[in-house]
Length: 310
Image (cartoon, rainbow, N blue to C red):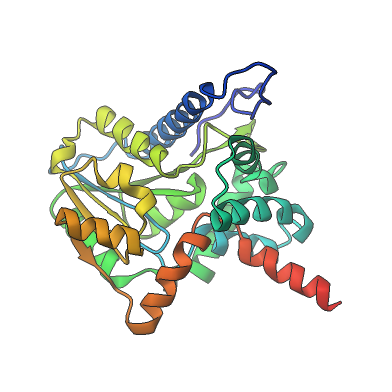
């Protein structure tokens, strides 16, 4: 469960004041990544506080999208919520556009990034944590369970069998990440923490999305709390964006990697596992960077097409 937050959020994006130096912005982004990582690690610690591992200083960390699961979990979640009238198409179009535009075009303007970040989970504002968790259970069975990669699942089970703890580390909301971890029998999960007050989502994030550097912060914070020796830990991901997490462990592994990660892994002598085959692997490799993390971009595109046809 994500920690309760105060009624006065500290994470809302603030406009740059006149005269404010742009050099201050990277510091702010690093702070957001740190907050996101610490919040995700805190949620994971609460969930696993009673676990007594046979190998307490070694663990494994798995990305979710295209690593544990085929496709983007946020897309499967949002599509399921949309079908259940959790939000309207109009509610999500703005957030989906900002996320997809940033991913596809690669815009790095800090103000645009801040706007996209703030709206990333805006479509759940006003709904309760209990609602999302209950529907998330249904949506996992309906749209996610059959998309788990058997090969990656077997790797996670191998770590469990060796007495190690296994955490998911994903940009998906912490609530759905914890459902996936629980259904797979894993130790726990770290994901993007959405701010909520009295059990109701505000539509803001705690820090930032758990993506890129924030994943490294989350793993570092969890390792400190759990007394893990990162040189004895493993990490698995499909994306070059997850280098901050992969590079901090002693046993990194590229799973269904994108082209940049595959090249980097080969250069570094890392393990590479690809559970895709033939043209399907090539197609997924091309689409991964555009789809993963773009909040329900496919829903937005389909809605736009339907409107044009009308």
